[in-house]
Structures are given as structure tokens and as C-alpha cells.
Image (cartoon, rainbow, N blue to C red; front, side, top):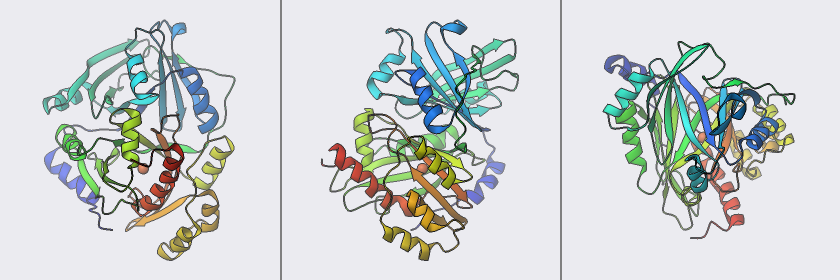
Length: 382
Ligand code: FE2
């Protein structure tokens, strides 16, 4: 498989050109959901997130309820509107429970807004200062694909828990962590012929670089195909692969997503663990459903193709964990089924051993597994 890995040149390029949008990492991911209270219970119980912060009627917020969940460096915010007039209702009606905000931690939210809007970003929120007794946070936001938003969060003058307006959320129900550590990457699905539009958008508006490219000759099964380009920021901490559907004999899973999401949006959130076997066993025991394992021949092939895997391949096979490698090492990964009734958002659990890729060697077996699910949903045939 031919891939263009230019990660090593990123630092040099940015040193020379200057990064107009320095990003420290992912700050939080906010979902708009129909029932934030119940969704919070699900992410605690099923995925091992901990109660962290809350905003709602009890904090004087009469418009929305937001539950902040934390697991190591990952922060999820689950938000529901408290009345029928709130605009969040339209987002939920159109897309179902969905990722609305991918928030990025910056040193200067005003400059981040000005630099990106100057380069063509559509504003979502002008730079806004929010204050409480712990200091102040500056936030701004721009639209990316579909109705999805990037918020820029500047918290250098803030020592509170999360954001002004939130209080600590203490709960008597505290399921233990499942070992999830940080967000490795987040993938967006966009419509037919839109991938390059958004690749160029990330290049021009956010100064990202096209790290890897996969075309439909590389990502296909007997029935369906897609194309994907991986965009990364200057320090490589933020990685956003972008997929678009491609023509095949049957319906692409990306097209299925676009149909049910009713537009472009976040397809999956990849979360990293140091011990994927323990994490996956734990998640399964909590009721998280994963895609079915590939056939035995896949693992027979892996034993030959990737001889340096430290983990016991038979144990990985038992859990249906996929294995891939590139010139820098190998990675282990597995994908959940969609976490809502619409076949839209799902999660990936990933453990990296040097590899910087995204499991391209697994795409075929992964998509065959998704196609089995599509067949059950009756969405594989055009
Ligand atoms: Fe992924």
C-alpha cells in the first residue's frame, strides 16, 4: 500500500513558515443529545467515564443541561436543551445524538478566531470572555464540515474545574475507568466529492497538512468503497481523517452515514489505551458492543505479515482486535458498533506501538465487518 508519510517534515515546515494556529491538544468534545442525564449514565457505566462537572437548573442555567465526563485526558460534554424553543432541538431532530463541538485548547482564542476567519472560516461564536471566581476563559468558534464546530478554548487565566458556569459534579455512582487515556484522532464523513474541499479547508483555514491519503483503489471490498485523507496540525497532536463515499457495487458505509446523519459529521472518535486487551474485555463486560471479529485467516496472515507483535495473537483474535503495521511499528485497534440507533457515530479503541498510521491494512476486513451490519440493517443494497 502506497502511503505518503510526511510526519517527519512537519516540524521543519512549521519552523520555517510559522504556525498561525498553534494547538495544544483536544480540549473537549461536546455532544448534543436528547437526554443528557441518561447519556451521561451510559458513558459512565459502559465506557468508564467519571462524573466531573455539571451545568443546569441547579447552577442557574435555565436553557440547557450539560454533564461533563472525564477519563484521564478525555473530556466529553453531553448537552440537552431544557425547552422546545432552544435551537439545539433542531440539531438533535436532524442528526440524532451527535458530536457538535470538537474543542481545541489554544493559548489565544481571539487570535485563533481572527486567523481562521481571515482565511475563510465561517464564524460560530465571536471571542467571548466567561468569568467566575476561578478566573476567566476565552472561547471562540468556527464551523467546519456540516453543522460541526471547532471551538477554541483559552484557559491560561483560569484555575477552575472546567468552564465558568459549571460546578463540580459529585456522584455516589462512580464506575471505574476502562483504561481510556486520550483522543488519538477524530474522523469526519463528508458527502460525495467533498473530501478535497475539506482537505483544502483544513490546509488553508487551519494550516493543517495532508499526512496520508487513501483512495478507493486502496479502501474497498467486493461491494463498497471510500476515500480518505488524514489532516494533521503542525505539532501532530490533532489528527482529523476525512472520508467521502466512493462508487461500488453496493452502498458505501459512508453514504449510509450521510443518509442517516442527514449531512456531514463526525463518524468516529478514536481513544487510546495502554492495554487494549484489558480495556476491550472490560468494555465488553460493561455491555459495549464491538464489530464482529475477522475470520481466522486474517490472524494467520497477521502472524506472517507482522511478526514482532508482543501480544498473544490468539488472545487478540479471541476479542476480535485488529493489527496493522507501518515502517515505525504496529498498532492494535477495534471498533464499536454505532452508539445510537442511527448508524452514525461509533468509537475506536487503539493501542499504538510506534505505528503512526490509522490501520489501513485493516480497512478491508473492517469494512467487510461493517457490511455484515449494513446487510442486517437493510442499508447495503442501493
Ligand atoms: Fe480511526
